[in-house]
Image 1 (cartoon, rainbow, N blue to C red):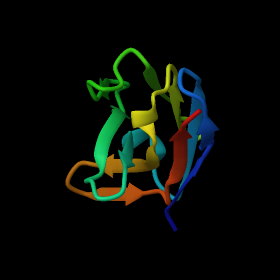
Image 2 (cartoon, rainbow, N blue to C red):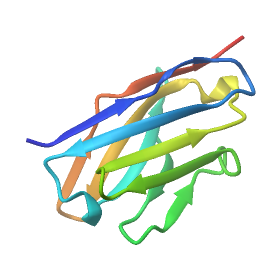
Image 3 (cartoon, helix red, strand yellow):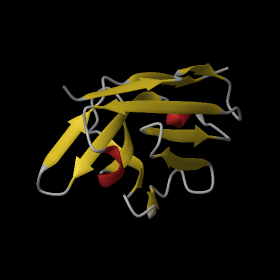
Image 4 (tube, one colour):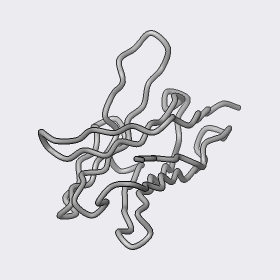
Length: 116
């Protein structure tokens, strides 16, 4: 059974920092591209950051220089460090595990709220 379990969401003030974690089980973690997406009500889910199995990274323009994705292939965990948070970063953040043309899995999501 595949599980992606996110943790670390919460309420933070503008300019603050928050770290998200996603623990994966039931997959060959090191082979997967791991990503973080976010979604707000009425909008499509958007890609925030991803890290390939070769440690290549991609960031959405809106988070470049503020967010950092990393992974630990021993702990089967992907992380998202979010700094200099803005109110517009408020969303439900989802972890994704992707194996091209073969598999695509999602976590249940964790709420991040940036507000004073």
